[in-house]
Length: 120
Image (cartoon, rainbow, N blue to C red):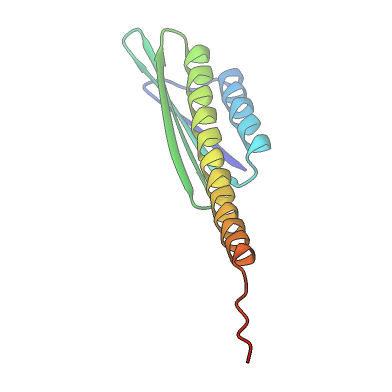
């Protein structure tokens, strides 16, 4: 997965960059369909903002967090993104279960109907 870390209004140090990359690559291990991630770090007065944009196959999600510590905001944004990804995955899996249940119910109804044989 390609990870891009950029900053607004300050320069990103190597330690902060590697921390952000590590947090985002943890998401990629659990969700292999992710292709790119863009982390934007920003400082406004005393607030540290983090935006994480993740794209993948049929997937585009964004999570933002604002705290007084950059590391905490990276953690919060990745946790929000993890929740979103988990919810998306559950929706997909639930949808498949519902489709399978419909097919099974239709087969059961078809098998339950008695056959009518007309005799002479």
